Length: 377
Image (cartoon, rainbow, N blue to C red; front, side, top):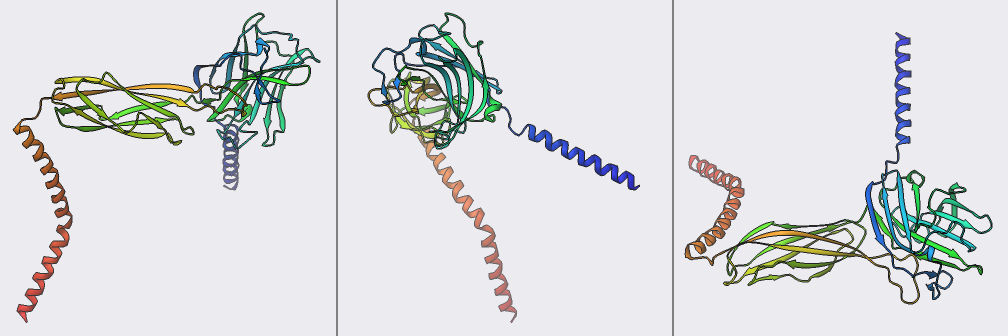
């Protein structure tokens, strides 16, 4: 019997240890996966990193990013940087780089100005080869190399206007919500670095949602009522929202406070819209559309002196509302509507009485008992 208990104890211990090992190996789940996305970038917008201002000369065209395609399966983040001119396998410059900065926790106060990691394809004129490095950055700009991949050759095609770059998300601890900024740069012989940056992109991709309560509404001519427009977006941003109404019925007024709001960073807002059909509005069902357009602000990696435009990220969403207009109410309709209001008030009074009835019953019972006692005496 002792051996049986001992064997059972050993079995349970091994099972627990195995479970802990499995949990530790899966401590970081996959990052969000998403289909291919694309962002554009303004051309000829290099930055002189020494002066923090727009580079006023013609830069190396194979470092000018025109757009970026990117996608992820949750384990790898893959990107294609499209260039204005074909990639040069052996550029004549002192240094050429293509890369991405990663804000792994959506927090601009961690890492170096929000940049927690750097993934970079590097060309050094001294070595004459392309290497890939992954670094983590401290708050004061110090870096630690996580991985190095020497003699890279599989990220381009000769005379094609693109380079590809990727990162194993395990290397950066499978972030669940993060931002990425793509860049290309070259270093002149005098050591000055000239860079081209895209805007920051959010992963998972930014979202914007809109709905109305109710989705359909019936109104009499000359009588107003409200609908509520519910807007929600990705947390952590404060986008500017533009609201417009399309296909509005004629002779019907729509009143709301403003067609432009700044959405709070927690990502939700409600806009009431008052709808008033006039006595001349067309009778019957009609559909109009509530459209919202967001301008998510762009975070700039550095403050640039002079004119420098970073395009915002725009998302447009639309919601349909069915409005049915009925003829101006006659006397019977008005009585019915008034009775509906009276009914609501009656239900309110009934609820109060129902809530007080136990108390009233107890008071009557006490009064009755008191009178009975007095008569007996």
